[in-house]
Image 1: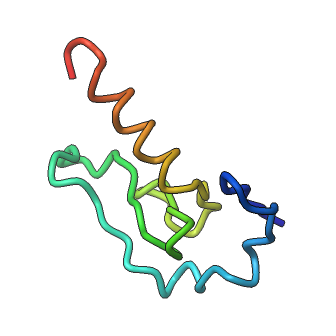
Image 2: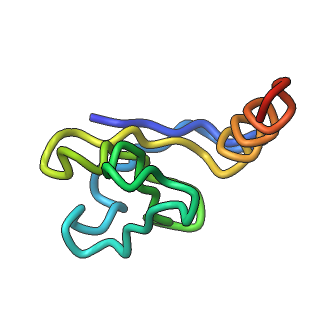
Image 3: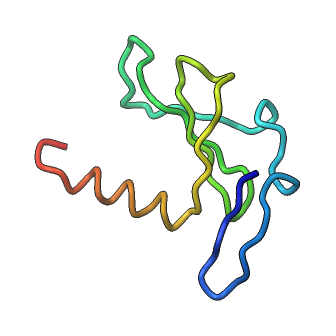
Length: 82
């Protein structure tokens, strides 16, 4: 069962709060490769971002907090050659 800890808040269980994965509005980057090799993201709740493999959408998705998503995007875009 997934949990999410938010700054200043108690740890809470996400499983009951998340919409069905199939019902989420998943989207792919406009910069994704034509071969389809990329990830898709969806805002599952105000406190949960889903990240999944576009080639295997039925597989498990990574669930992260929005601030973690922003940190990841910043780290990726700050890399030389990005």
